[in-house]
Structure formats: C-alpha cells, structure tokens
Amino acid sequence: MLIEHSTNNSVLAGGGILWRGEPFLSELAVIHRTRYGGEWLLPKGKQEPGEKLEETALREVSEETACTAKLVSFADFLQYKIGEKEKLVFFWHMQLVEENVRTRDKEADQLLWLPVEAASKLLTYDEQKKLIVRSGTSLRAPVGESQEVRLAKGDSRQTWRSRMKHFRGGNKIRKSRLQGSITTSRKRMESKLESCLKPKLQHLYKGIELLKTAEFYLNGNELDIAWKCFHESQRQEILTLDSEPLLAEAKVIRSEAEKIGGWRQAAIEELLGKKGELIPPGLSNESVYQAAQIRDEHFNNNAYKDQLFQRYLSTILVCLVVSAFLVFAYLYYAHWCSSPLSFLPPIFGVVGFGIFGGAFSTLLKIPPERGSSRIPEQVYASRLSLIRVFIGGASALILYVFIQAGLVLQLDGFDNKPDNLFLLYVISFAAGFSERLVLKTVMAVTKE
Image (cartoon, rainbow, N blue to C red; front, side, top):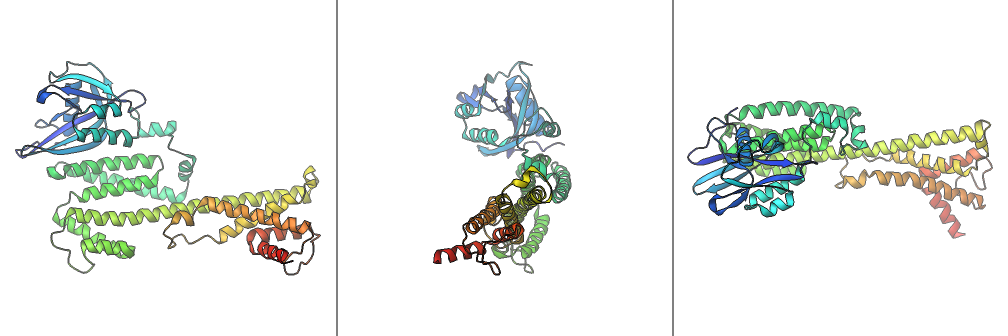
C-alpha cells in the first residue's frame, strides 16, 4: 500500500529504533552524521517516490548502520519544521538480524550500540531522546517469536488470576467480542491508509498499532488493558474523520451520553450540544475525541467495577465452600464415625462454625454490583471480605471462652452453659453471622 510522497510543503521520512542484544531492549543503534557540524541521531531518512514508509525506514537503517533488520512494531512519529516545510518522521521498532552486511553511508561515520540511558544523553535532539525513553519503558513484548509461541512458553505477566479468567464464561464472551471488533477496525483503518491526507496519517498509524497492542494483551487475557487500547485506537480514528462522518460520530456519542448521565453527560453535551439540538458550528475532531474519551472512561470504569465485583464474589464463595467442607469434615470425623479425631476438643468446631457463619453473612451482605460508591476498591475489597469472614471465627471463639468461664450467655432461651455440643455449634454459627450476639454478651458482662 503506497503512501503519498513528500510534497513541496511537507516532507515524509522513515527511521528505525534498532535494538540489539539479549534480553530485548538491551542496546540500540545511534549514528553520527558529519553534516551540520556533526550530530548524533537515530537512523532515518526521506521517503523516496513509490516507497512505503516502512520500506523507507528499513532502507535508511540498512544504509546508515550497514545492518539487516526486521520490523517489530510502529514506535511513534516526530513532527517539526525545517524552514517553511513541515517534516513528519515515522519510527519503527526493529530487531537486528545481521551486522556489517554492506558498506555504511559516508554521511554516517560512526555507529554506537548503547543502552537507553546512555543513548538519551548522547543524542543531539531532545525529541529523539524522549522517543527512545518512551520506547524503552513502554515496549514490553519480546521479539523474534510470535505472541502465540511466547504465551505458550509462559508469560511472566500471566499471573494465576489472568489464567483463571480465561475459563470464566463472561470473559470468554468479552474476549470473543473484542477480537471481532479489533479485526474489523484494523481492516477498516488499513483500507484508509492510501487515501488518508498526510496531516492525519500519523493518527491512522497510531490507531493500527494500538489495535496490535490490544490484540497482544487480549492474547494474554489482560482484557481491561486490551479494551483501553482498543478505545484509544477508535479515538485516534476520530481524528482522521472528514466533516460528514465526524458529524455522524458526534450524534452517536451524544445519544450515548443520555445513558451515562451525571457529570459526564453534561461534559459531553457541553462539547457536542444536547440531543435534539443542532451540532455546534465549527465542530472539530478534537472536540469529538474529547467527548469519546469521556464516554469511554465511563465504560472502562463500569468494566473495572464488574471485575472487582467478580473477584469479591469469588473470594467469598471460596471461603464459604472451604469453611463448609471443613465443618462437615470435622462433624463427620469427630462425631459421626469412630476415628482418632473424635477426641478433638470442640474449640475446632466452634471456630469452624464461626468462620462458616461469617462467610455466609458476608455473602448475604454483598453490595449491589453497580452501586453508587465513588470508591469501588473499598466496597469490593477482597481483603476486607476475608477479614469479615475470620472475624466470625474470632467472635465464636470469644463467645466460647465466655461460656466456658460460666458467664451468662445473652441469648433468648439460653441462660446457662449449654451442655449440647451441637447447640454450641449453632451458637458459634450465630456469633459468626452477626456480631450483635457477642456485643450483647460483652456489654452484659461489663455491666456486671
């Protein structure tokens, strides 16, 4: 797919951030050019007629470093003026394949391989310094193998939680939906490359690379990051739209604002006008981009709350099932069959029933999935739910100590020390279920 060549008013160029060494991102190539009094640069150069920008980048890297390289991914673009002309330089991450395959360009009299920190100090221009620093911290994916092979070998980012997510039905649906959206969007954006005007070309490249990043995280079961990358790719495409499709996109976002409500709806209407009214004259791509960003933040926040809710619910259910199993095992071996465990003191059963009561109570008190809380981390804190569960066991233990001490149990119908172990277990479950029983007993003891 050919990209429009430089015109009299602008210049297109391609370049490479050429990486060498193991692990990946160890060293990058920096060249010294003799012209303009000498300058240290990343290899780059102007696009020739009929070239794709990727081909320009590979050719310039080969000419100025005498190395063979292969493309990894789009890095970023730099935009600046040379006299009256605007220059756009598109950079790609590349991996070294072979060194010294040809004679280096006379212009590039030195080639150094440096780590990011050293290269950023040596480079002449601040824009390139910032570019490689961003690249060194943001480029995560190893190269030289496909994502599928890499994931099969085991990714350090794939924690046990992310692997477990893969088997949940809800996430499978989300993953399938996102995969289809990525494929469709990528085809649509790539079809626009040839006809896209030069000032907007960088946004299409960014959008396409964001889709690749989204697919990378999707394959790693990091759905939240994948969705965020996908949404940003769609917003980059908004920056390339002409007036008619831009107007249509603005109307869609404005309609969706009604479902969002609150301050986000007001902010979107401030940018695009209220539904039923005319779109404000002189609508800009940036205004629609901002409105889309506000909308996407709402959907990302809801997805985040859903994730916290699922994790919270899973934690409580695990606690409930484990405590129920332990209680049943204790009853079976301590009371219902002849085994050495029959001599276990009842305190084990008391604590087990207290934890079981705490887990059951926590499950019944789960806040609604889409509550109004502004801090979902506090509402759906898994650690907090575990504390509540184990407080149930502690409450039952405290009550058991009071009973063994001969103190009065403040529970209707029970004024003395119960002589039935199963009745003691029932009281332990109640103590774990609600702290009121313990508080009532403690208050009675302190009054006495």
